Length: 124
Image (cartoon, rainbow, N blue to C red; front, side, top):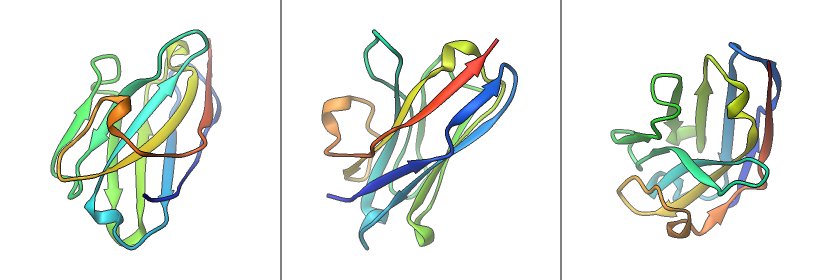
């Protein structure tokens, strides 16, 4: 397992942008797939983006496709989620998660390491 710490959340107006970062500990981070999940009050935690170990494979939920971009820097043990054209429905706690493996993973129960979450609030 790796330890994950998210940062970059905050309050932004609709149409604005935020970049979330996920910093990982552990020298083998480059062998992990990483996902960004979000959970709004009363809703299930959903995967919005995922990236494989090399950064060559990515996944986006339909609700964020074209607006969010996931990327990683294995030299710095970080994964970023660039969020543009934010909407009020993007309001949620955002979590990063990691799983050892070569693919992208989109199901919550596939991941075994989680960060503590960071709040993103988009005002209308």
